Every structure is written in C-alpha cells, then in structure tokens.
Length: 334
Length: 293
Image (cartoon, rainbow over all chains, first blue to last red; front, top):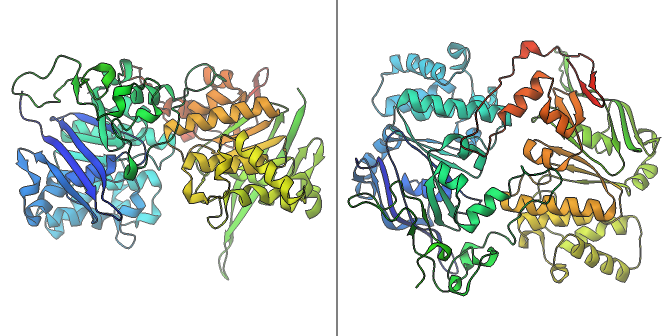
C-alpha cells in the first residue's frame, strides 16, 4: 500500500464571524489514491466546498483552517510558502468550479486562459502556448478547436464553457483534479456528456479526482469511493457499492430513499426537518433532531468513527478502504 | 376524463436585434404547441433550458402574451379575455415559481405575501383574511406562529411552502408548478413533492408540472410531454413514455439520467441531430402516445 496522493487529516475550518466563530468543517479525514475518484456528497451548507477551498489554500477571510493537516504527495501544504503553493495549484491540483461563467474572464479569449496557465507554470513559451491550447481544446472534445480558441467565453454554451474550464485545469497535467459541482448548472444531456468526458480525461491524463456534488446519481456513475458530509462532518465513508447498497448512517439512508424511483405516485421518503444552522448546532450528533432512530445517547457527544470492516490494518491511513460511519447505532457508545 | 385546460397551436415568437441595416431575428420559443390537461391529473412538460417549457406555462396564464393560438380553460379561450376578466380567471389558475429566493418580496412579511391575493380580490374582512392565511399556513405545513416573519427567516423549503400557500389562497383548481423543487436540497425536495401530492388529493387540484428532473416527473405525473426546440416531440402516459420512447430526443434524454445504482449498466444514447426531422407532425404510436417521428 503506497501513501495516498492526497491525505486530509482531521481538517477543521472556522469562519471568524460575529457573534461567535462558526465551525464549517470539523474533523474531516479522507484520502485519495492514485487513479481513484472520491465523491464528496452533501447538501448545501454541509461544508463540501469549504473543504475543497481549505485543501488548496484559497479560503478567503473570515475563513481559516483551524486544525488538521493536508498532505499532497507527502508534503504538508500548510508548510508551503505562497510561491510553492501557487505551483501546487495548477501543476499539482487542478480545479473546476460549478459556475464556468464566473470562473472565466469575460474579456479574455478561450485560448488565453489556457495559455496563461501554461506560461505561468513555465510549460510553454508564448509561441507554443496557442498550439498547446488548441490541442487541449481538442482533448476535451470541443469541435473546431482552431476556431474556438479565439472565442470569448460568452460565445460558448454552458457545456462548452465547462469543457474549457477542464482544459484550463488540465493544461499543466496535474495528478489531482478537484471538481466542485461541475455539472450542476448544466442540462441533463450536457451533464451526461461532461461526466463521460471526466471519465475519459481520468484515463487519458492518469488523474485522481475529488468530485464534489449534491447529486447521488452523479456519484453513483463516477465515484470509486464516497464520503457523505452533514453539517461540516463526514458521517459515512466507503466504496460506492457499500454506500449505495449497504448505507449505514440514517442520513445516508434517508438521502438515498428520498430519490424518486419507487412506485409512481407513492409517497417519497422525506427526511423530516431542515438542515441545521452551523452557528447553533445541537449538542451531540448534528443529525439527531431529524433522525428516526434517535436514542438518548445521541444528544451527549458526536459519535466517534466506527470501522465496520474491523478497523484499519496497521500502517494504513485510518480511512483506507474501510466502510466507516459515525453513528451510535453501529458502535462507539460511551 | 374531462379536459380542464386545452392548449391549441400555441405560438410565442420573440424578436430580437434589428437595427438600421440589420434584419430582426425571430426566436420561435414556442412553436405550434397543443395539448390537453385533464381534470385531476398531473401533466408534466419536460425539456432542457430553452426548450420553451416555461414560456408555454407563462403564456397559459398570460404572464407573457402569446403570439397566437388558443388556451381554453373550462372551454373558454382565456387569450380573448379583457384585463378584468383575466384577473378573475386567475383566481382559478395559479402559478408556483422555481426560485423561492427571488419570487418572494424580501420586504414583505410572510402573512402579507400570502394575504395579497385575498386583498386584490377583495375577499373577507381583515380578521377573516388573517384566519384564512393561518389556515393556509397549516395546510402547507408551516407554523402559523411564524406569520409575521420575513422571507429570509425561512429555509428554502419553507419559502417554497409560502409560495404554495399564496397560490392556494384563492382556491384554484389548476396550478402551474414551474420547477417547484429544483432549487431545494434533495432531502427537502421529497418533503415538498409529498406535500404537492397530498394537496392534490385533498383539494382536487390539477397540475401542470414543468420540470427537467425526469426521475421526479416519472414519480409524480400521469402524462408527460417532451419539448425540444419549442415543439412537443413526444407525448403520452408516463409509464408508456419511459418504457417505449420513440423520438430520438426522448431516448437521449432518458439515457442521460444518472442511475442511482453504481452497478446499473450505462447505455448512453447521444442525440444525433440528423435523426430529428424538425417540424415533423405528431403521429399516433399507440392509444394516447404520440411522437414526431
């Protein structure tokens, strides 16, 4: 077992806001191995995007990483100076955002976005950059790349912009790509094309992928392993089959059950209540107020991690390949 | 089955551009659309952004004036109504919008938002209206103790319930729901869908459900029409469409829905535009199933 490509250990991110700081990400641990896709799934406000921004050090104040470590290729990213960190962003970790129109500069041509990435990282001269840009646009399956390279972002459709974002992210051949809701703003047929492209790119560029989404269908189609976030914590983690076929946490079960798919016209299995406010989380398990299996112990302290496979083998990262859950139904009772 | 609403040859063209030396271009947002919504059913309009499904819904309530065509509600063409007649007709036909964040006035209290239709139609005394709004709050699963809160004090799902309470205030029989849950979290979507189905049973409502989420459409609708570039390309009973799609666009759309089983076989069908004979008339495939092939 080799060391994971990305190893996040007990990451905690705090937003220093009045009247008291809000913990947006608490004690989050996972790792991504080479060639693997980890799906990070959760609802709005669950902390999945904040996790991603914390990893690549792009968190804006008042947000700050308050604890834990992020190891990328064995290096602790918190120890890097800003110039080294800039090298990691782009050349080490590529990033694709949800809203491609907001991430692309409206007054820069498509080719210039890609060229900039190549030139900043010293991978191409100005003369070569254009040819490389055309090549990358062809790789992300944009038709007529020689012409499109001179288009402005507004001349492209949503799906094409997302492809351009991917070309920019992949320009420096990073080993890891973080994609934050890459298909949420797209129509379903275009979403299917972008997901197919992501899979192609993964094989072609030998990528590992952190895929952040709220859509369990996207996860089922794309991920190898899944981490489910709720109110800032990972509550369940496992292989995609473990999560979809044997979900253990009541929240994961509820999420899966609330997807329409049963008998037409039957009642959907809704999860009662609403997502809690991070500023006033209940004591104990954050999901307890909405949980049908709530017990007295759930109000005491947040459940510890229970490894369902009997615990990690010695020398391996705590979460390696293990189906793990944070719920007193499955162990960890004081 | 009695038709409650009948849309006949509905057309909406938007003109754009046009300068001194440039011709105007015409966008055919809705291009000769006809369908019937029967009393008590849920009829779904599906399609991608720009397919004309929302424009069709808005034209039916004349929130946008259609270019031509007819919209018969209980046999009468609402497109021929005067302003006053239309306002009266809207008591019976209401709309729920997609975005619960932008469709509620942030400076009005929830009570005032839900009360507004009653005030406009001069229904009841102030005390009557207060009681009616409290009753509507309970109906949609909101706590009447929160009547005087502002929209920002509610969650997304609760705001969509406020929009629903407002739509129900005048006891309509027909509701157009334009992507009513697509802005909500998955766990909350199911709550609102269950509420929509309960209200339909309880109040004998007829729905036109506009959506792009095919899993949801399959769950909630009795019949479905698939729109593509302003036209209906396929229409029929929901199970029939899902089991036996005929139009190449419908096939592509159905195959693009991500399966929620990691082991499900993936058979993606890409749409070959050459296969779509644009402007082909709807042809009957089987009883009640039509496709433009």
